[in-house]
Image (cartoon, rainbow, N blue to C red):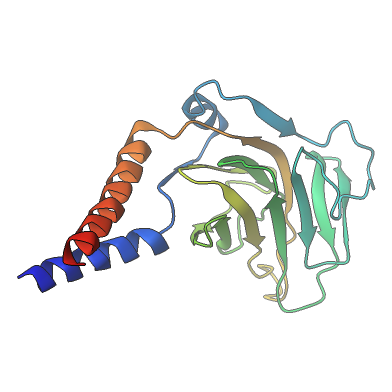
Length: 216
């Protein structure tokens, strides 16, 4: 009986150790900002930057940089959308953007711009500093000028976010040309539900430690 109980606790502890931190995602800026609970934010919409400004590996927010599969990453001046982050060229079999958070942020939001409504869903991956990750399928909006918002607040710090574009809808080749815009990052206080989950995980680990000490 003791062996079975110990095995159950050990498995639970292992699952807690390798599961991604609890998180909540948001489909609009208003609900994302409300969930931040007044936490200080850093924002960047690129409008104050001149078209063609280099963004490749450059901190556009404190502790936030970006790269892409392409060789250049710049502020692109779109007549219909405004200034956005865009990477070029798309010459391989896939194209993605990587946004790296070197400062301790557990909340990030941004718009995916110029997403053709005829395209399939793309994949968005969130990587946490504890080496876990989670992913989402992101579909385009109603029109190509409709921004697609993504926001996430997690119970642990975020290391990076990767947005992988789907195929170009007309040719089927690589890739649907999207840009990123309107970034918001913050260190938010975890929501009550996240605190409960974090407390439960800590309780499991403490319980496993007590059982090991009793057996020894």
